[in-house]
Length: 137
Image 1: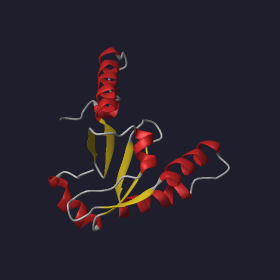
Image 2: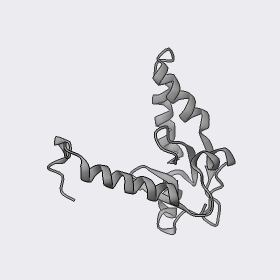
Image 3: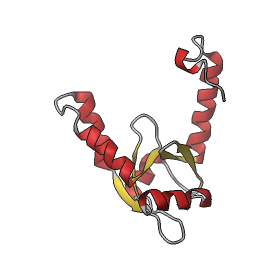
Image 4: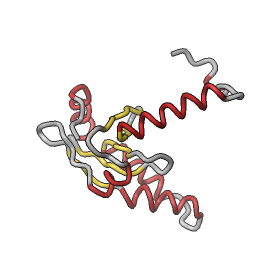
């Protein structure tokens, strides 16, 4: 996968091109973190109580699937096959910026989820959470 040019310099500056790809436990997409950000998250995940079933599930899935990927000189990263299979990645994929991380989606899965979320939003009775009502976009 080629990282868009507009992000390459920032990724190289932040982590010298070293990143971690892992699965998203809620959606069929991948999460891509700069290595320093992942290390902080990994410490927090490892600190969760191992006798708690939900915490252990997250530890197994996120840490167990974490794979180191490196940005090459052409601005590409090689995503391991097991992660590509999980997210259904084929020819057409999308990279969705999410602050300190990226989400990697198959184009078809992204379009379907986006439409589902927009439909849910239009039918929601409760509206925005109170903390977001004063947010100006």
